[in-house]
Image 1 (cartoon, rainbow, N blue to C red):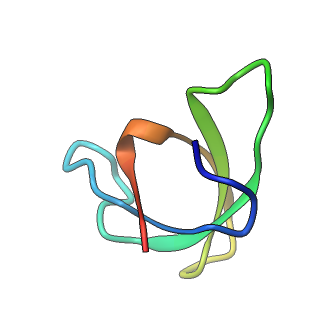
Image 2: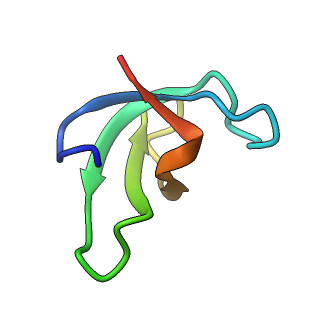
Length: 56
């Protein structure tokens, strides 16, 4: 699991944000399989499966 403020990048080729980077903006204990990422490109906050991310 990634903690808040961890820098991440989307690695899943099937994800439309492939290659985009951002920071983990929020986590939720009821949904440990995904985190909210605030992307650098457009500042959008998007729920992303942890399996789609890699730490930078």
